[in-house]
Image (cartoon, rainbow, N blue to C red; front, top):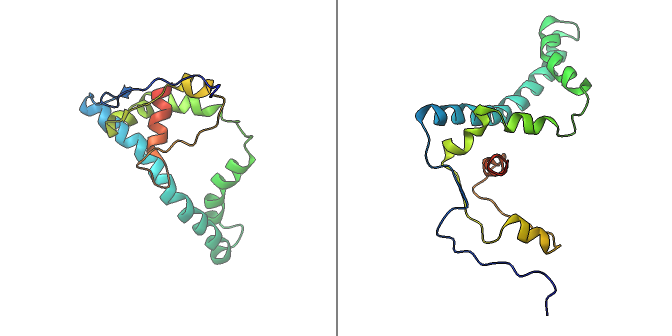
Length: 144
């Protein structure tokens, strides 16, 4: 005998949240916004390696070393925002176009409220994903 509230069964023939209709400008903005996230994963390690090499190749006080280290130091010295910047970024117009670029659709078997009512913890899989989960970004945007 289960004490958890019963979850309603939903047919997965219709998406719960859907972004299939968009203009070419919205898809282009979504592509550019998604590209920023992808670019960071390529540029950041190369930038850090270049900054380290520059210390040994040019010295600590050379202009190239200072320019390469400046963004790293500023980032390290800025206070932690505690996630408060995320809603600002995720609610911006270009980022809200990412689900339209991917023509994102969500299908749910149970609502968020039904899952929370059980009092249990769940692991949810969202595919496809890579190093950076665009499905996660789309889900966050769709949930706002």
